[in-house]
Image (cartoon, rainbow, N blue to C red; front, side, top):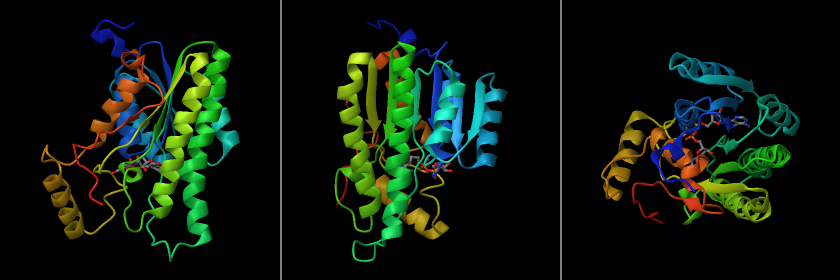
Length: 256
Ligand code: NAI
């Protein structure tokens, strides 16, 4: 049982992080590398991946870039194999999509479910298999969203995929626990990343102002806020946590 701050130390651990080319995934890769982990960064954005790897290298950390699409199970398997003894997997890659229920096309739903659910499923499956094979304890972290807690107009595809991620997380926690593998989800509130920064500066400012008003902490979330939650779940500090949904959201009760 961990009894000191050293339980956050990831020295000697190996981590796979999807979505590591930017936003929350990049912040997580940098933080986990800073905590001592060898970090395998996966993303379909090759340039962003190289930037993340360079950031980690500059700080004296160890990073390996795996350009891949999380919908490609074979590519994920190869990355997991390349990682060797995998201890930590953080399935962070994801996309945003908005359309009303009535305007949602089959192809929208398929795309969002493929990336935001199946991509997470494949990452969990390949990582859990490797961890069971290692015979060492492991920690898998998925990225859900505050969107699962309440309905919001336009978010059917996104929130349905994230709700499926929550069920995947809890189910896998029950199945992998006896092998010493913990599985938890992080469900962030609104975080300032490229995903949420695709609006005009005016709309962006209005959205951020609304988020600041709703948060008792009177600020918006940054990728590093979420990375800290992932570090906690990845490390021995959370050794009795599994099947849980951690909600770093600045205390914002979902408004809808
Ligand atoms: P982001 O857009 O900054 O980063 C997402 C990363 O995933 C990008 O680097 C992108 O290239 C990668 N990616 C997307 N599709 C991929 C695919 N098929 N294969 C491989 N890589 C792929 O987004 P952000 O904000 O950092 O989001 C990270 C995760 O956090 C996502 O799962 C998102 O749904 C979730 N989230 C984000 C929130 C926010 O407010 N930013 C709130 C709640 C959850």
